[in-house]
Structures are given as structure tokens and as C-alpha cells.
Amino acid sequence: MLEFILTQQQKSVLESRYKISRDAREFDRIKAVLLRSEDRSVKTISQSLRKTEHSIALHINDYLTKEKLKPERGGSESHLTDEQSKALIEHISEHT
Image 1 (tube, one colour):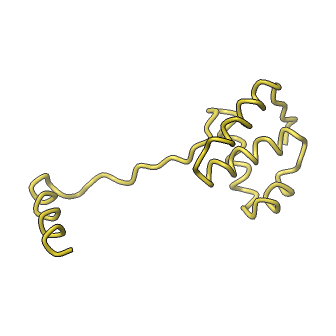
Image 2 (cartoon, helix red, strand yellow):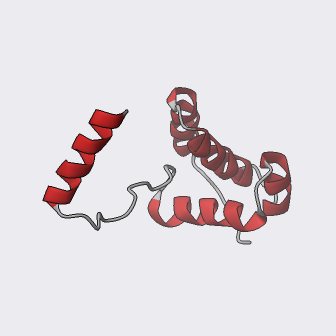
């Protein structure tokens, strides 16, 4: 892998974000980026964080290309019509 260097400002931003984040997945992404910037190998990072080398490499690449640290969420598109969704909500409300 190519040399990975962060500026002191980037490190400070990541460390601050790490302190305020509430998402364990974001913690792992931040730790992976910081450790890689400290010249740790992907293999060592993956062993330390108990994640696959592939996942760690993706986390680092996501940061390098998009400065992405949060995992994407969102689910899928609904296959129900608005009417079906309303009926389902009513049914669940009545029976739970």
C-alpha cells in the first residue's frame, strides 16, 4: 500500500470526532485511518480491530477518496403503496 500521511490538522479533527461519536462502526473507521497514518499495516490493524483486511482497506480507501467515516444506512425502497403502508401501520398498532 502507498504511504499514507495525515496532516496534524486532519489527525486533530479525527481525534475530536472520535471523542464525540456514538457509533462503534465510526470508531473503527477512525481508528483504522489513524493507525494507518502511524504506519501500521492493514494486516496489523485488521487483527487489532478484529475486522477483515478487506474491510480495513475499504475504510482507508473510503477516507482517502471521499473522507467518508460514517457507514451508509438507508435501507431499501418500499414495495408497498401508500394505502398498503397505512393499512399495515394500523394493523400493527391494533395488534401490538
